[in-house]
Length: 115
Length: 114
Image (tube, rainbow over all chains, first blue to last red; front, side):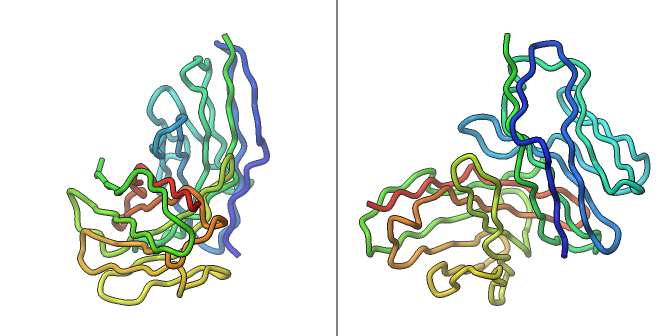
């Protein structure tokens, strides 16, 4: 069965600390992977996506993620977090079928950045 | 990126009544839309896939007679919560996706059934 798992449920960091949020997926074939962010009271916004090519993906606001096929992982990283990065982060995956296939979401990671 | 608009943003209804939520893709034609439900501090749970011109595909455990989905055009999908009860109170989110792109999300609808 297709699944996406996030092992960090709640992360608290001080400003300027480095961030890495884990994401693992389980899909039978090739996969499209995404990281979305949900700021308090707002809708989901795309941070970055991986479809193919360079496994190191750069996103908005200084975020990046690395697709490691051998580890079935797509971890999100940021070298130095800001207070404004406080939000809920969701990893999601979809089979790469060439159609508008459904996304499966991980359980989410709540990031709290303290001043 | 594409824009998906959801209406209303919040609604309060009495137990036993029905509520309709609209999801529109404003700048692209979406043959497929998705409806999610999000409980407080939890992830998004896919309820159903809405296919233009055909019946929706519901996820296991989702009551299709309670959550009616209609995708009458390439830019509009509606979710109707029929005979709503307090346990249906939740945050409902729609999304639309084109092939080879990410999913674009509406702002969500907070439903409170009293």
